[in-house]
Length: 228
Image (cartoon, rainbow, N blue to C red; front, side):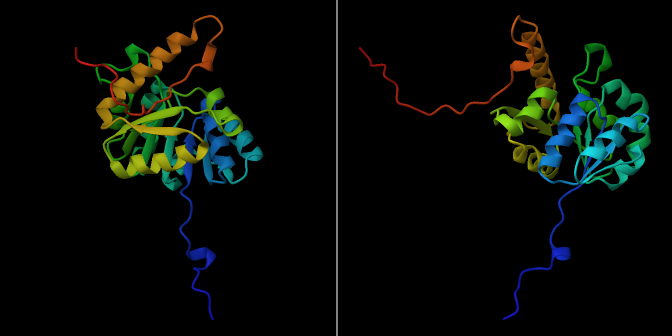
């Protein structure tokens, strides 16, 4: 009897993830994606760091910023907000319509210019994309260590497009991280505030980026209080 299993070419392909920025965070994300055997496109300023990273990761290729934005199914912006504003957004705006865009930035207050949050500013800079705030509350060292140590960290996400959030969830959870849906994009203000709190705690002696966020679901129990 002929097998009904679809041919390899007919199977749904894994979404291509484009990582824009190959610093510590972009590198950690690319490594986490490579561990899942996901196809990754890499772009960096000047291209040198993207090419070097692509040479040592399976299923990874370096490309121009425009090509990454055009060919990737999901675009992760692992870049500072000022670079997104001045350099990246103008070059990718025409190529990201309808695509999930992960804003990973943690801006300084003066970067926002009255826009509420970095993610809301990115959404204005890329009006055709479906911006999702995610991965800004996890350090590069923590993200790189999840696959080795199974760190039970939670990544809060916010965005207005449910399908975009689901696409982002589909690449975060296999990396060993939990996901907490915080709601629409305006909730990114609270997620960015949480990141600032974590960075403040990191300054305490002996902590560094050893602190992280984990959402706990408490088990409901009956009250032990009695009425006199």
